Amino acid sequence: MTDLRGTPTPTLAGECVGCGASRLSPAVCQECGEVFDVPQDAFAIFGLARSWSLDSSELDERYAAISRVFRDKSSAREDLRDRAAAAARAVDAARKMLLDPLERAQYLLASYGGVERDEPVRKTEFQSEVMEINALAAKARQEGDPARLAGVVREAEEKLASAIMAAGQSFTRLERSLVEEVNAAAEALAAARFWRRKVDELRAGVGRR
Ligand SMILES: [Zn+2]
Image: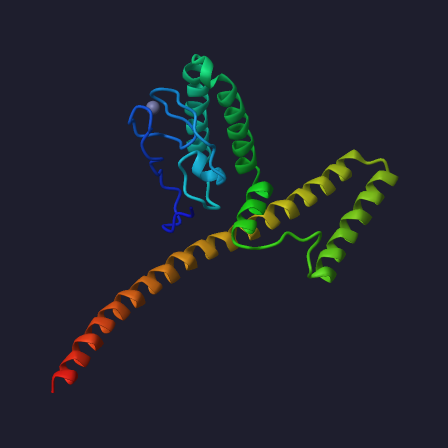
């Protein structure tokens, strides 16, 4: 579920059916160690809202807490051991995916119905940048100049960083407008409900005459 507030607000994962404790993660109960199905939504595993802006220290704190439960509580119960190990692997993979900005972007893109491309569609601009970097790298290698080659690496790193930043800006705009449009739809629906009641009321009045 996408949290429509669009912020990585901690969300409670509901109560444990085993012991009734409110869970930190839908995947496991930190009180009794009961293991549940790991949610499809990687953010939801950690009780986080799906969003580009990810507090990595918050994620790591929750990851550490969840892992500790698997290790100390779930594994202590023989009936849960195998499921705990499998769930722990899924939680590990989700954390790794969320922390990698490219993986996170791919995940968010898919969640918005977008499809990843093999390369940018705006080809000319992109390809001239690629050619420039390739030419600089070839020259640096030819001259056997490691400092120069390191400079080319830095330049490529900057291109990587700015592409990630552009993706992040798009996701942030998307999240913001999603919140706004959902609010607008909620307002319109409230008005429509009122007017439907009013129309019914007025029609009934017409009928009585
Ligand atoms: Zn429990």
